[in-house]
Image 1 (cartoon, one colour):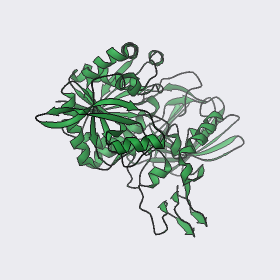
Image 2 (image 1 turned 90 degrees about the vertical axis):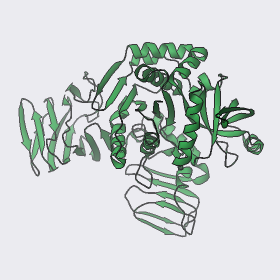
Image 3 (image 1 turned 90 degrees about the horizontal axis):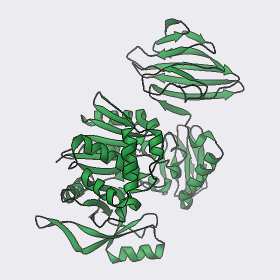
Length: 496
């Protein structure tokens, strides 16, 4: 049996602002052990038996950040597995994402290959119980059924959907009960209904994780949402596929993807199909849906405070969650607060209002404020840049380029740049010339000059860039050549 864990990495994670941003969404948040939620999801799938490939559906702009996280996770455990990517030009909900992955997997591994669909931003603390649940789910998938994972409820939670199991219709193999036929899916209930569900013993939380063969899923989509499947096939036929160096990727055609109806896999298939089985399980699952939930992962001190901060001073503070971003945090005489500090944004909220953080994110996005989208430090395929200071007609950045990496060959219309090498050595194309710039040396890039920065060394290249000009937006760029496959275009087109 071929097993292909399929990770869905998308969404904004608006309730975890200001750490979660549009270009740094929830799956990339690092927990106290140093691993991101995305890395944990990858390891969760990669360490299962019979895995032949890891598949990920994500936004095109998150590809290189995702690959970096996977590389770090794989190296930490000595795992060598091929990675496949289906790259979306924009979000289109889970049904199109899973359809594209299923069509790709069926074409590569055959319709009998089993997909294990995992959200990238969930946490599972009991890997052994998870692996046992997956074993039951794959046995169900081999019977041609669709399996979903139902989490045994710990409390009458109103923030989750529920699955009602039909205990009179068990699904068995070799005399062992693997799961139960699904009677119905229920949307997030009010508290009274949630209490009824938990008391009945027939309901589980809907985890959003699924297991099925690629062929069985495609048959159900043909039956229940043919428009999504047909449009996804047409989109794939117009899309670009690349392979090499242990990975494959499909860049979904933007025009074709826009024609795919927007719907969730729950609404499009699971709630309509009579071929769905729920696998009840207790695996230490959480969807980490708020800062309050994330704070619960930290052991409290004697005053009930949960602190993730290198430097903190508290006086008469109780039952608070405090997460720092490097600065000293002090608090006096407060209780039941969430305090999350980042270099460019600070969140202060009552713990019982943790779900309402999404309204701040929505307001920032509606107003076009950069804090909904970018951190002060921004990841790029070649490394990172950090905005240190911005003023009238100038901007100062710290730029770090990975060993062997280079920026695109590009030009700016409205700004000139002065580069000072802090550590490492830079290879610089400037106009028609090329030169090496060593530590403590600098070079000047006039507006209108074609230029490229490369790190030819074995250590990271660190530079200070001083921009000056009438317009300093990241969209003042014309790309002529780029090794990362970012399409050259006339301005405006992204950042470096």
